[in-house]
Image 1 (cartoon, rainbow, N blue to C red):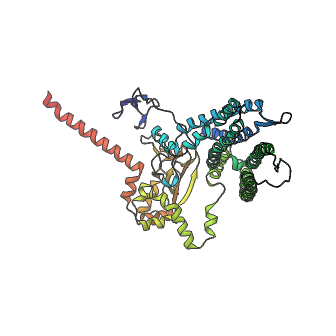
Image 2 (image 1 turned 180 degrees about the vertical axis):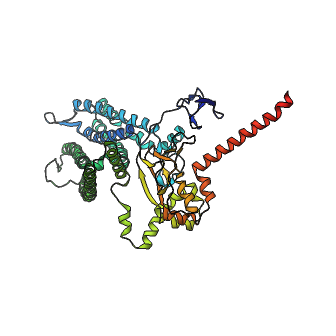
Image 3 (image 1 turned 90 degrees about the horizontal axis):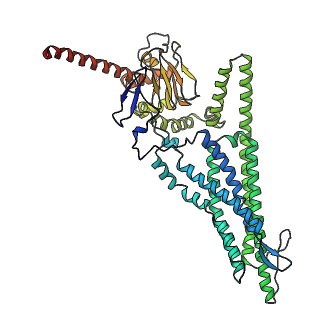
Amino acid sequence: SSLSPCIFCGGKKERGRYGEEEEKLDMSNCVPDTRRSIMLFDPEGPFIQQWNKAFLICSVVALSLDPLFLYIPIVDGTQNCLDVDHNLANVLCVLRSFADILYVFHIFINFRTMILVPASSRVIGRSKYIDKPQRVAKRYLMSYFIIDVLAALPLPQFGVLIIRLNMVGPNSFTKETLIKYIIFYQYVPRVIQASLFYRKVTKDSVFFIEKAWAGAAFNFFLYVLASHVIGALWYFFAIESELRCWHIACKRQTCNSNSLGQGLKASTFHAEILFADFIGAIGLVLLALLIGNMQACSNLSLRMEEMKEKRLEAEDLMSHFSLPKPLREQVRRHNEYKWEKTRGFELDPFLNDLPTNLRTEIRRHLCLPSLKRVPLFNAMDEHLLYAMCDRLKAVIYTEGSYLLREGDPAHEMLFITHGRLVCGRNGFFNEGILTAGDFCGKELLTWARDPKSQQRPFSTRTVKALTDVQGFTLVVDDLLFITSQFGQHDFRYYSKQWRTWAACFIQAAWWKHCKRNAQERAPHLN
């Protein structure tokens, strides 16, 4: 291979054996020495997936630490005075500091993680990630940065320090009640941060979906956490009520004191009445959430049982036909990838139960935005796109799958919306990469323009998926209808193979022109 300088950045590009210029892995010369490239994490990579699950568990456990700070004030029964549990305070400060370090590291991870562009606003042919560090930082600063910072502040440790510095004096009780407000004002952003992060993790990861015990344990822990918070508040309000009764007793008045585990009525103190109302309301909310989660888990369990039955059926069929191990692994990866994308919901059975008009409207709503993001389809008439929506079929291919093999009959065209494929012929010079916005199966296109022969054409290339691929397929009968409405030159313009051929012919003509000019100037130079 030969090296040619990059005219844009002064770096190096390597000319491969098929005539394509491929960037070398070391592209540090493309940026100034003062600004080295910043490594960003893939949000769908294994590191971020594992970190998200670990941080979600740590954040929920950290939520159970803050209510424990309300147990720090204690009543010394022998001397009838307010005191502090120093051992509990020391342990909680250490554990809370460790949790704050994890929150700070999570903020750093968010600044270094690429942002996944939503499918509704994704442009075919461009990256599905926001991979510029400046844009990633700007998006994060404008979204959840404030909540993450508020959740990471060491406010409870600061409150414990204030209590210890004001143990003696007439204002000691006021200082100790300060921790109640500190815990409350920081617990709210922590709960918001944990709930938003839980939605993100359950949406991006299938761990809590495939593992029924994980989802059940997590939801059960949330109910235990709610009881833990209410118990801590009850204890702290009991301390306040007892101290308030001491003050009233000093004025020779009576009071009504409640304690944990007794069925006494609430006193006339407004905060205690509001807390009793809060307990009743939170009980109703938790009951409603429990019913909703049970229904969701029931529906999910049914889909998981169907998925397991399909997997067992597939394993039995593969064993019955004695399929080789590599082929079995491809089938398993395809089923897992399909489950990850669809979560067990099949669109075709759902549409078949609907009337024709609703079925057409739903297909247009689902397929039309994706079709318009493909450059080839964007040039078509809108009425033709409507007709294509009823004919295109969404497909999924896993990494390493062969879509077409050289010499096999071509049976469909594939329009890529996501992923990368490699196509070419053995020993030929124009092997290339197909990405989102490209299509393959041009042999069918040429045949469909003039289908005099009843025999379908054979594929002239081998197409293999380099990554997980999503796209739309168009079978032969539907292709005949599309080609009758659309010009062949438009298909050739958007075809990667035809454009590669055109570039090769232009280069060959240019070299012949330069060689002819050099031969004509040679006699004059002599």
